[in-house]
Amino acid sequence: MASRNSQTGCDLTTDELVRRVRGGNTDDYEEIVNRYQREILRIVSLTLYDRSQTEDIVQQVFVNAFVHLADFELGRDFGAWLRTIARNAVREHLRNHARYDRRLRAYGELVNQRWEDDDRAVDFDESLRQALHNCLQRLPPKAARTIRLRYHEGLDFRTMAARMNTTAGALRNLLSRVRVQLRECIERGLARQGDSCIVSKNLP
Image (cartoon, rainbow, N blue to C red; front, side):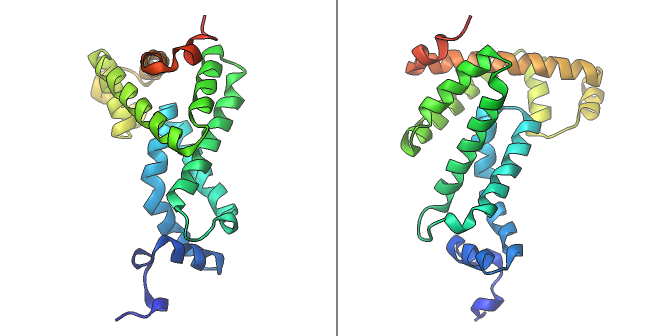
């Protein structure tokens, strides 16, 4: 049987990994990232649906978690702790960008109100996921394919352009318009689920 010191990161609980990282074995933090990256990516991407911004925020979440790892209380749910950090990072991002966009300001207010506590946040994440799914189903075929290639397959614009027989610039413009359409569609979907007073009060 392997000794505790010879165990790999995959063999350890998250609490054990946290203890090791705190003790100076910082390489073990990579295993923590691997365990939770998909979940944090899901939370951020559901809210923003912008690949470059999502990746930047996810990276910042794990940087923030590493810096504040000493604050984590062993025995608690590490995933819940990370989700709180992720939601705070999204709030900060929306707050920083809302000054330039009235619709984004209204959307940011909605996110803030629905993420007031963890239980409500989980419910809101599911509502957001369902609203996004419904909106994606309504996109025209070219727009839907653009979203799929960019966000699901992770292709760059030049590769996408070659596949779709168009230019990278045209796809960037299309994706920018589609993101606006998705956000507006998601707002309407959330409004139908009971958030109409929050979504609509600041929209033109």
